[in-house]
Image (cartoon, rainbow, N blue to C red):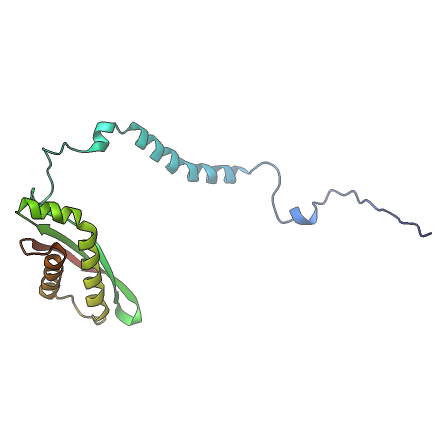
Length: 169
C-alpha cells in the first residue's frame, strides 16, 4: 500500500486567483470614484422627485403655446450621414416643421408624425448618400422633396413645409 502525503502550505502570499486583484476594503480613490459615479444618479433622482405633477403634465390643452404659433408642428431634428472631407464621414442635421392652418388636417398630421418623420428621414438619407464630400446641401431641392413627402403621407395638400437649420458637421 502506498502512502499519500497531503501538504498544506501556509504563507502570507495571496492565492493565485487573488494575486492580481485587490482584496479587502476599497482605497480612498476607489471610494471617490464610486461617489463620482453615484452623484449624477442621485441628483437626477432628486430633480425627478422635486418636479410637481402639474409641471410634468404641461400646459392645459386650451392654452397651448408652441414656437411658430398654434398652426405649426415642429418635428424632431432629422439626421443623415454624408461623405466628409478626406474620406471621413460627417452628419447632416435638418430642422423641419409643418404649418397647417386647416384644423382637421393638422390633427391628422399630429397623428401621422411618426410616418412623416420616417418619410422625411428616408428622403434626407437618400439625398445625403449622393452628396459629394465638399458639396453644400441644396435647400430648395430638399424643401421640394420633403413637401412632396408631406403631401403623400397626409393624402392631400394644405401643409406648408418649413425648413430650419441645415448643418453639415
